[in-house]
Picture 1 (cartoon, rainbow, N blue to C red):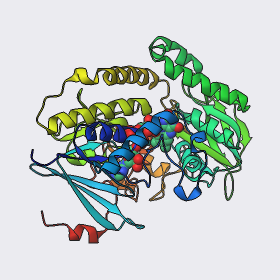
Picture 2: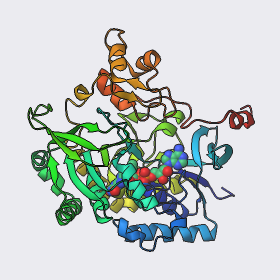
Picture 3: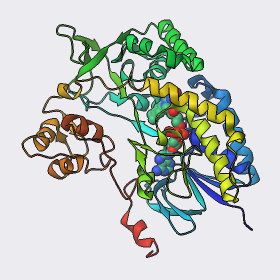
Picture 4: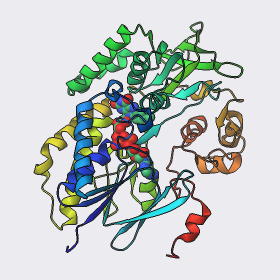
Length: 462
Ligand SMILES: Cc1cc2nc3c(=O)[nH]c(=O)nc-3n(C[C@H](O)[C@H](O)[C@H](O)COP(=O)(O)OP(=O)(O)OC[C@H]3O[C@@H](n4cnc5c(N)ncnc54)[C@H](O)[C@@H]3O)c2cc1C
């Protein structure tokens, strides 16, 4: 190639940054595109610059790794090898015979169209939280666990004074400890998984001692802050008139039903609730990449089955920041080699491949432990709103799947409008799937976000 090969990386979280660094260090010109105003993604979410945070590291884990990523990217930015387009939301990646066009929106109202042409694309779009409804979940004061953390890390604000952190999954630990350390009273950490399930997988989990040490560190922090942990418990209802005033939690029996007589009310002004995460796959789907379950399928080099498209991090499966870093690094090296016509030597990334294998095995063992508790959908009353955009209730969804005979999410949507609003089902689809028993299938949306007609009209006919 006479000119330097050009890679577009969508997502500046751990995976995208590691991929950009590895590719730029090997002579590839990189454009890093991210919807956020600063690099870091979810794990290394930075406080807004205007807040002038003096010690942002106080809210973070593994800050040294972040400093290495940040300084590395800064050096490449200064040298002109990397361009970082912040505040650019990619709505589509278009494949052409020998290249790709990345279409993004920018501006205060995301009304201005921007295109980036590249020889290859790395999709590092991360994941998003699985939201499961329950009576009262739409009250002000009920936020997602990640949302509460984003307020703290990005805005340096607490979502409330007295917080219950609930749901399931490892994310609840940093959220509860982070809120407590920042001055919130964490009235309880309500986890639907039980310690027995973790113990049964102890051999697989022990293969990654660093993660176990991290878990123990969080447990120590919870003790230090006096946070009461209720395992094998779930939130069955949020109460309040204008906003959240309390939650009712109950113990779970083996079959996932709540134990009679175990319900108790906990006063709080905030409920931070999360039930794990799902991969962001919209752009990959539009490009025609095959998914395995809900994640983008990749090979040993992190290549998707669409030539020229790589994927890394949580878009390929939920597995944490260390896995995202390893995958991003491997993808960046593979891209650099292949863009210059070489066959990459996997021995050159052996350490990252080992880290990837260990992390994948660890999260594969953890995954079933932190599944939403059986019977969660049965606890949703008919009058509970499930699709907030279109205000569709659980009763309407049940009617669509029962008497009206809908057998897939698309038919439920056509009958009820659930999933037809602004979020296009990203929030409500897991709940609708759980209520109806329909499989959670990819949305097959042509665009990853709503696009102004003016932007579409300005595109060349092709
Ligand atoms: C809300 C939330 C909170 C989390 N908190 C923790 C935590 O405290 N501790 C922990 O260990 N793990 C946490 N995780 C998991 C952790 O963030 C991930 O393991 C890790 O960040 C994954 O890295 P990634 O690079 O794959 O994706 P991410 O870090 O999620 O980065 C993806 C990036 O892609 C960008 N993006 C996505 N779609 C587009 C688009 N269409 N156009 C432009 N940009 C786009 C996003 O803005 C984001 O910056 C959290 C995850 C979430 C979703």
